Length: 254
Image 1: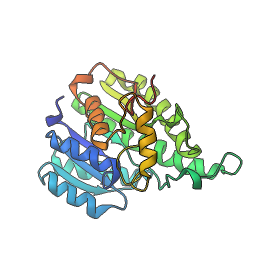
Image 2: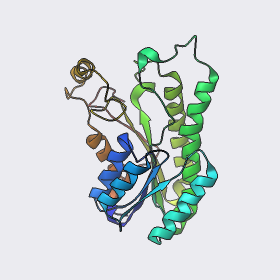
Image 3: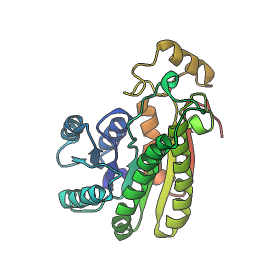
């Protein structure tokens, strides 16, 4: 299915990386559902910019199955067709400040539970809500957003990293289970991006160190990361499922 024929849900699309991903799909002619939890004003503004006939902003907490079900119903009523591509980008509130994060001897399991509920629980909710429509359409695509930190744990984001590692496991088991239905499930994992809301306060010196550590000698941009997400949603990757593509300029090599 070409991008122009897809109805794409991007969770956490009101800000940060999700906003760039939603914008990229819109630029390629896809219809886009921009999910948000708190960034409603920004999500609605982007939907209007993409075009009212091709984009709608809908609020929902992805950890709440009832809200997710309502989002899918509203999207189908708005566009008259089911969501066929899901990008699981939404993340529970998190401070990306390595110096301020709890170390191994201090962190409590509650921190892990919060991240697991948001990252893995949210993905389970959106994927399961999408399955009936994808099956009606004869297939679909799921792209989960990961991180290179579980392969290169240079910052002690223990809870965040563990939840993303669990999401990779879910990516592979769901890919195996849903493949016979023509539904592909993949992951795109990045590192430091220049620049999103999460990295806005990152000192230039840190960007310089990361850039010097990559073969490409540059820090990946959100637009470059979004392009990889579009690849997994496109027909170009129609034989690819259960994979994790690291998009970080070669800092981590599989």
